[in-house]
Image (cartoon, rainbow, N blue to C red; front, side, top):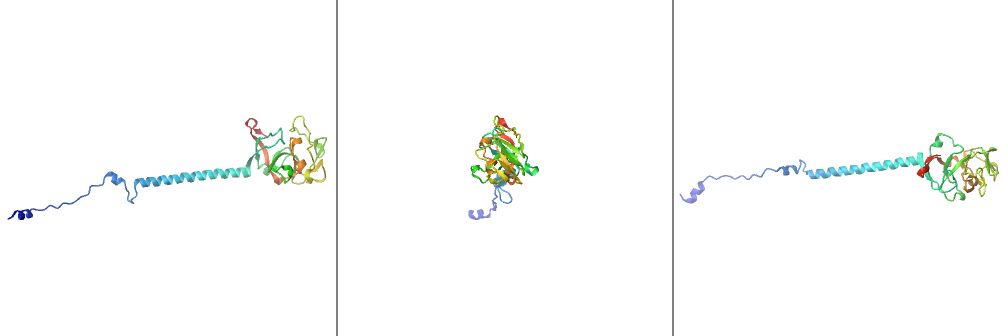
Amino acid sequence: MTDQERTSERPTTAVVSRSAPPSLDDRASGSRDGTSRQDRRRAGGSRKSRKVVVEWVLLIGGALLIAFLIKTFLFQAFYIPSESMTPTLKVNDRVLVNKLSYKLHDVNRGDIVVFEAPDDPAADGVKDLVKRVVGLPGETVEFRDDRAFVDGKPLEESYLPDGAKGVTSPSRTEFAGKCEPPADNSKCVVPADSYLMLGDNRTESKDGRVFGPIEESAIVGRVFIRIWPLGDVGFL
C-alpha cells in the first residue's frame, strides 16, 4: 500500500464554522424593529423639544389673549400729555381707566373720565381726552363771573387750582353749537345722553366750552387710580 493510499484512508473530520456569540454591546445596539437606542433617544428628545415649543406658544398666546381682553373690556392705561387737568393730574402721569364702571352705574358729576376726542380742530389731533364731568344730561351749565353754575346754583369745585377757584373763562366759549336751546356763549343745556366735560385747569383747557357736550357712547371709562409716578400712586 502506497503512502498515498494510506493517507486517503484516514478518517476525515468535518470542520463547522461557528460565528462568535453577539456581545452585550451588539445586543444592546439594536431592537426588534431595527431601531437603535441612540435613534430612540434622539426621537424622544425631538418629541420633548416639540412639546416645550407647543407649551411656550400656548402660554404666550394665552397671555396675549388675556392682555387683549383686559385692555378691551376691563382696564386700560393712559398717560397725561398736557396741563389741562393740573393740579389733579400732571403732565406724564399714568392712570388706569375702568371700562366697566359705567356698565354698572351712571356717570356722576365730578368723575374724571377718558373719552374719544371729538372731530374738532380744538382736539389737536389727539385720539383720547381726559376731563372732569361737570354737566349731566338735561342740566343747564352757565358761566357767570368766572364761575360755573348748574341749574342756577354755584358749583363747588375744590379740585380747582389754589388761587384760581371758580376761574372758568377759556380763550373762547361757544360750545360748538351742540347744546340744546336756549344757548349762548356762556350757557349750555346739556342734551340727553350727553355730558359736559371741563378740565380742572380752566384757563389752559380746551374742553366742552369749545367742542360742546360729549355723547355717553364716546366715554371710554372712568379714571380711578394714578399708577405713575410711584410717589403719587393713589386712587382718584
